[in-house]
Image (tube, rainbow, N blue to C red; front, side):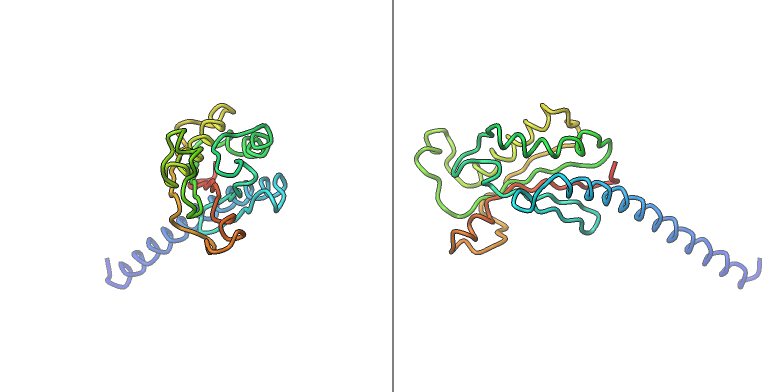
Length: 180
């Protein structure tokens, strides 16, 4: 085979692999975009912020929507809000569901300490775990979902104001993967 034909063949092979990789990425993006559209219709802006970026769909819920101040137990209103995620999450077959919990930097109060929670890291972990437990009860695939707490690390606003602390107390549900 001539050297020029070999170069052409190699170029075609590389171009084909780049093209096929692009198709998979586009398919994945389209699937996540459908989930994004569905969730956008379910949540009001004061309940959750929904962002589709870099192959991940992230739903951020502020703490007032899910938990009482300094608490980690879900009430009926919280369950109703989380229930809006269930139709999307329960249909997933391959997409990882990651539930992250965050807090502000205010020290843990006496009430939580009596319940065995002594740090913001423990509080954020407990909140993420409670959300996962509820979603599992609603039929979300246990093999796809995980929870983790980050405490007061990774703030999205200043902890010097009440509004900033409120933004930092949040649950983020991230969908990662092929979008189905």
